[in-house]
Length: 556
Image (cartoon, rainbow, N blue to C red):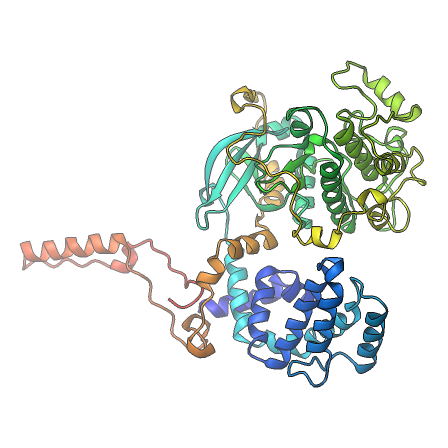
């Protein structure tokens, strides 16, 4: 039976079978655990309390007092019908005392941890034995299905990358739009780019961030390896800095983009990944005006407790320690952030004038030996943060001490920025792209790739292709199912919370549906019987059909 087959995959799909991985990290797992908790009032109280705390943490500062009082009265008062008894009385008293002094964002963090720890114990174990977890396994089975070019509809070319074109594409089953980055197999082999391509794919797989382009699918065709990525229709920062009127942005807009870039870097650094190629061309805008870091070809994962060296990046944006081939960890990214903030405000990069023709060696010399010049466009705070990020001594550079990104967030340049609300996607961008405009070079001007000659693909390349073509990426795929409402449509149970047939172990499997060939042969058999009543025509209809049936998720 289908369900038993899915259950047999359980140990292999989830080597880490804990609450965080199954019920918090994965979007569909999170929703199904919540549905399970709704069947038990004592569990539902904890879930609602955690939701209230999450909402409190993104509440504007002037409303924290009102929201905090509401949480205490509703969830931390014994007389309340939805009192969360799993939070100890001593902890509640400490929280109330701190609230009376002054409410702050992290006020309920310890209380929330108590509720979280409770849910990860007995409630989690009960969930694993419930029909809701069986349904989660069905979704995981669907997630692991093969992905080919036929999974998508291909649309117009958007641009080109180092190894091939980038075009718009759409998932046939859900209608979700993405960008498909094609890496031509022969071009990769000719340039010996296998390790770079695989590195970018594996890093994109590890990172789930609203501020970094996400990888949703990876598959191969006969001629290319394909990365299916977040679609960004708003153009890149370079276009907006230089092609939308006077070069540069107002400081408010520059500050917003810098804050989102900083959050993206922080998400990469949490995974021990250093980006190493911050420049305006690699920062893309979406339909709503939010930005994401793209093109992770030069990013690298740093082994725990170690430093690396490598002279990689773009001329004019590489940090002094990169140019000097010194060891580093995340310091080049904070240097790159300083370069970007400077360029967004000044309308030119810090070490090369706009359209200035200068040799690479001269630009490198300026980076190592000269100080950037600040015009009247820079406020005191903007000049301060640029100078601190562009410190030539990486040990003195802002962000390179123990607090890392948190220290940069506290700089006065970001004094008006509520990072909790920014990270939750609540803040509105200062600029929203016009959906009718094209914020990029004319597609007709994009040069066509020439045919790669003298390169033959053979059996030794297959190992590399198998590492690359791993189909769906879990979290983006699950988000797609939720955003397109496929989850809502398919996630059906029986009446009054009972098992649906596909979740019932004792329910007989649905017989295979009769396909087109079956109907054709049946009609032929009837015609032959009518025309020659004495003749005997025997056909094995089941063997004649090629139809393969699988039980769909939810009740039929």
